[in-house]
Image (cartoon, rainbow, N blue to C red; front, side, top):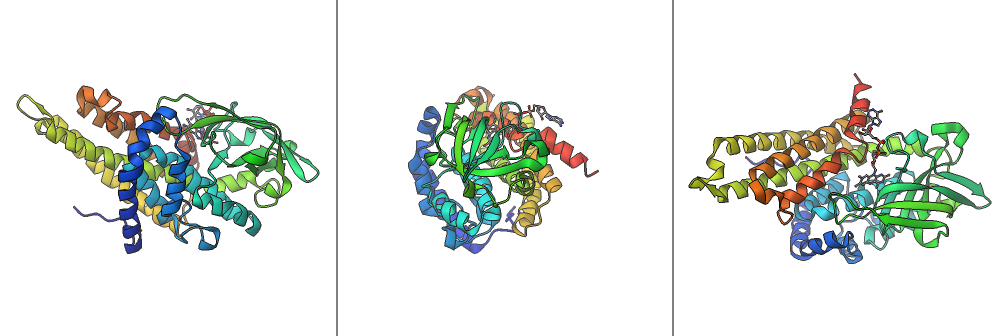
Amino acid sequence: MNYRSSWMTAELDIFRETFRRYLSSTLSPQAHKWRNDKMIDREAWLALGEIGALCPDMPEEYGGLGGTFAHVAAVIEDLEFELPEMALPVAVHNAIVAQYIMHFGSHAQKQRWLPGLATGQSIGAIAMTEPGGGSDLRSLRTRASRKGSAYLLNGSKTFITNGQVADIIIVAAQTAPDQGAKGISLLVLEADGSDGFRRGRNLDKIGMHASDTSELFFDDALVPAENLLGGEEGRGLYQMMELLPKERLAIAVSAVASIERMVEVTTDYVKDRKAFGKPVLEFQNTAFALAERKSEALIGRVFLDWCIERAIKGELDQVTASIAKYWTTDKQFETADKCLQLHGGYGYMDEFEIARRFVDARVQRIYGGTNEIMKVLIARSL
Ligand SMILES: Cc1cc2nc3c(=O)[nH]c(=O)nc-3n(C[C@H](O)[C@H](O)[C@H](O)COP(=O)(O)OP(=O)(O)OC[C@H]3O[C@@H](n4cnc5c(N)ncnc54)[C@H](O)[C@@H]3O)c2cc1C
């Protein structure tokens, strides 16, 4: 069966072939070290920038390749296949941070931040979640008070991907607390020049070990007024609502790629592994379990491709993105569990890819809006 994603192009084929080869030969061998360090080397970001995998959909005048969301999706898929350790950090950088700056930034803001994000000299992070809650974004408590030509940020964030290394952090904060959701704004904090900004611990997680996740603290942290994204206060919630579908789609892209990869590695494993004198694939339970997973992988892929097409055209809506995020990540975790089982005891060993994919899959149902929140959004459309 030869299925080809409708959004693929001959140009992307060439890019992806080089990219995958580079990942598997040069960067993937370093992943073990990064998992131990709980951090990805900065050189790897620069290498991705060099090869054109950072901000590939940004216009050339801002350092990108002038591509579309197809390029963003292709990079996430390839990373998920060859170097899953970088799939989340790069998705945050490409599919979230760069998107906010491109969509809502002024020309000057784009000129200031996008070229560095495209080369990997600047690493991006987005800080929405607070210790007091992540799902209820309207109640966030970090405050940004205007003082002359700057804002002073006060509060804290948690679970921030790339938080240990980020140079540019988009912070969601209240600029007019009395106006509730209408008082939320997005400020771009440049980590280097901001006194009063402090990175907290690199949090210990059960999976995603190479991706750093941090607490961030703001104690009169200085953000120049011109770093207000879009230049108008109170637009933050609207800006987040507009771009969350893309963020959620990016999570679905990695979920489906991971499902496909797990089916592939598990199929190889059960063809090779023998019990009772024959490959375990010849037990009907094993074959049926994989037949089900393979079917779901293809069904997920076709739906995902339809969503990617809509994102390329700028037509991906909130509900469709929520369906994609919730369904594919639930399936990813289910697939990880079933495929791990088919590996027997080896599946529980950290050195086996399926074991790592199992723990990494779990969080996909939580971040980017939990799958329960996805169902709340879908249910509102009933
Ligand atoms: C590894 C990792 C990386 C992350 N990266 C980032 C990042 O880069 N930037 C960032 O800002 N955040 C990030 N997050 C945070 C993530 O987005 C939040 O954890 C998530 O949105 C949930 O928020 P919470 O943890 O506060 O859970 P809560 O909001 O406290 O939710 C707890 C439980 O209640 C349920 N719940 C809440 N409200 C409802 C409701 N209305 N209906 C039904 N159920 C509900 C939730 O589904 C969940 O099961 C990351 C988290 C992790 C674990």
